[in-house]
Length: 461
Image (tube, rainbow, N blue to C red):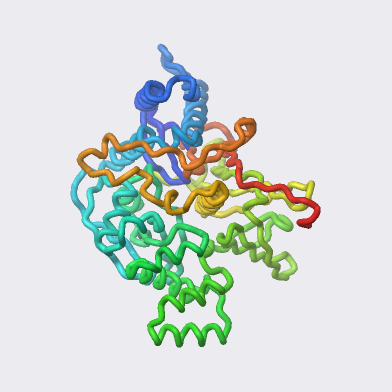
């Protein structure tokens, strides 16, 4: 989201996923627009709010903020522009300048699932991909397996619980993202980043891959993310004592919620408003553990192939026309994930989840769809997970990085008008902390269409 700074020279705060990412001026965004136009042709690029000769009135400032917000969301959701090095490096540079962190060598601690720390020497200006490669190098994880893993931003609770904030993205600098939070509870964690457990076999062929997978499985079981009964627990323990890591993982793969990410308790409007729910993502579904108002527990799953589209909306609670709960650099943003679900053959219904982790949920949905689509088209996950950068780029020439093609082409151009396959960023909002007058600042008309959506025939019901 974008909001105007209180400073009259009109810098805009760009909030990515509810957190202040960077501060930019109109002229810098205009410069980005000109570059995109030059490289991709003006017919591809969304329209940009025009320059004005005279000083803008408050109403015009607000109008421009809304137009810039729409512009940034449109670029981000375009499969080519959103994935372009031009756009992502603009955001990375702006992030570094805003946080005023000079480029220098630093040590970053990256955690493994078992709490072990890996210290990597990186530059403050290294992007997510570079940091991931540095971690892999330090661990001895071979190149062809790097793509099976991702870096996640996690918040540790005092009780040892851990909350997944988001997967670190290609438009950010992990060192800057973590240090700018100025909170020791946040860490970067390495975890596998695919959903289909069939790919575990690729990873287990390698000793380091096997150890990472094993550590993650053990920790997910200890956390209660994977459900285990007494007998299974006994079998797992004896495999552990024998040191049979592969057999341990093979047995764990048969257990409930293996390979799922579990979210913190939150609120849903399904089956009725205000229900407490624990949501988990995995196995191409969102699993709901709902507590009904009469304290009855219900469990059910929403298949990702039956979600027609979804969106994340963010809103700031307003009081007297100003955003009420805004501290310096941080707004209490209410995030919601809503998806339209095919409940029966001809009945679509919206289901809403209100959770600070809505963006992480959306990123999970998106990556499940991406994986399904690659499988459908007969592509191999290996190619999808291979370096997004067609061969590694070295620091010296990372300025002219090879552009990676967008992951998926939209199969049906006629659906393109309704919904676009979003890229990995779900909610860019530009919000006026001091000048925004729109009472419920919702930046969520960015629907993520789902190309893995399938209708249901009579035989399915």
